[in-house]
Image (cartoon, rainbow, N blue to C red; front, top):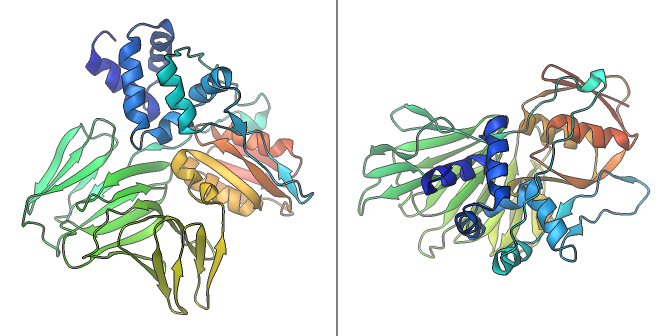
Length: 392
C-alpha cells in the first residue's frame, strides 16, 4: 500500500466490509504501523464530513480507539430500568465531536480488535456474516446493474441523465440542463443483507435499508418530485420551495419541501412509521392527514394516524450501523436480524415473552448478537445453515 489510490481503495473497501480476511489484516497492520499517517488522517477527516461518518463510527476498531483515547466522551447507551426490560449489552457510542477531536489532536493509535470466536457450542458452528453495501439498479430500458460488483465510474447515460458509482460506493445522478424524461423511471433495490446510499437527480440523498426498493423518475425535475418506497429508507431532501418532494409508501403519502426523515414501510410490520428529524412533513393516508414536527413519529394503518414523540436516534440507528432496542419483543428484533443477515427465522414451541433494550453494532456476525441475546435468559437460539431457530 505505497500509493494513495491503493490506500484509498482499501480504506473504502474496509469500511464497506469488502476486504477479505487477509486483506483486512494487512490493512490494519499497515494502519497500526504509523506509515502514511497523513494519508489516513485525511481520509478519516474527509469521511467524517460526509455520510461515511456512519461507517467510520460504526467500526468496532474506532470504538475501541475512542474508548481508550477519550474515555470521558465515550458513554454507554442508556437502557430503561424497568423490570420488564432486559439489558442486552453495553453499547459503546461516540459522538462525531470525539472523532474530530481525535484528528485535531493528532492522536493516531489504532489497536486492532481481535475478533471473538462465534461460539464453541454446536448451536453456533455456522456463524453468519453481517450485510454489506450493495444493491441492484434497474434502468428505464430494463437493464439491471449489480452495484456491489460494478466498477467505479459512469454506469449509464440516457435521456440526459448520467449515473455514476463513486469511489466511496455511492450512486450519484447528474442531469444535463433541460433534460430528464419524467416517463422514464429507475428502481434501486436492496436485497436482504444489503444497504446502499444514493443521491437522486435533485441532490436529495437517500440511505436504503435491507430488503427495500425505491422507484423514481430519472429526471425528477417536474412540478413535483415523487418517489415510491417499499421497505425502509432515510431521506435528506434537497430544499426546493417550488417543487414538493413526495414519498408514497405502504398506503401513505409524505409531502415535504426540504427535510430529514425516516420511513419504515416493510409489509411485515403492523404500521407504516415516519420519523421526523428536521423540518416538517405532511403525512396522509385513508384516515386523513397529520403534520409532524421534529421528534415526532407517525404510525399509519387502514383506520388511524397516530403521532408520538420518540427517540429519533433509535429510529435511524440502522443508518448508523447499529441495532438499538427499547422495550422491544423478540419478534420485532428477529425481523430486523432476518433482513440484515439474510436468514430465515423459525419459532419453536412457546414464544419468548421477554422485552429487550440495548444496542449492538450491525458489523458483528449474527452469532455474536444471538449469544448476547441468549445471555439474558429470555430466549434460546440455534443456527442451522441460514435458519435461526428461536425458543424460550
